[in-house]
Image (cartoon, rainbow, N blue to C red; front, top):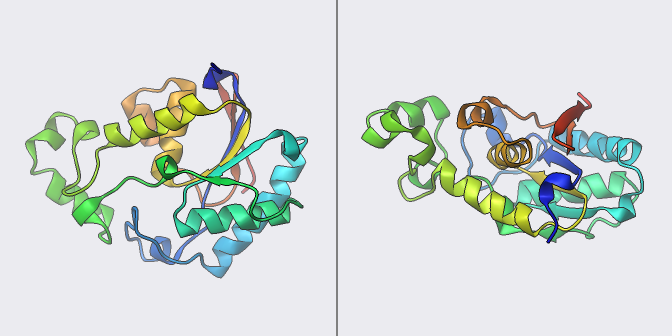
Amino acid sequence: MTDFHALTLYVLRHGQCEHNLAHLVAAQNDSPLTAHGREQARENGVLLKEIAGPLDALGFYASPLHRAATTMEIVREAAGLPADGYVADRRLMEINCGRDTWRKWPDIEADASRDPQWRIDPWDYVHPGGESLSMLSARVGDFLNELKRDAVIVAHAGTMRMIRSHMLGLSKDATMAYHPRNAGILRIAAGSEAHFGS
């Protein structure tokens, strides 16, 4: 069995979406990429070709949510690859925020702070009708444990935090302190990380 810590991962967040501009949490719902988000994806595709070596040696995986899958397809085309040569995996979807979906984070946190579990450990706080961070971490870990080769992954802010956390062995606080951008590529290899692009 392959130890995913020995792999090199190129991790990208989906391009800017309409809900990002509105400062709303889409979670496992969706909104379209903006024109700027599509350009970010194209730039990431060109960048990937520059930094990743032979692309045919890599696996390609994306969240099946439209914003991530569309980003992956644009990235692949910009890198000179067929758009459809990737695997969509539900374990890479954003955290399920349940009834907190389509709200703003400050409002979500204000309500959550009244829950005893949030005050004890927000990591195990379950969004009403949704998931906790620990649940998200577990499903991302399950995905990583099945990886067998170096890979390009297009996902979401929450998913990227968990990939980075598993790969680098981070604490809960360090995991959540990371705020991935919609542009650029995070490369994680041999217990270290590097960010490329804007």
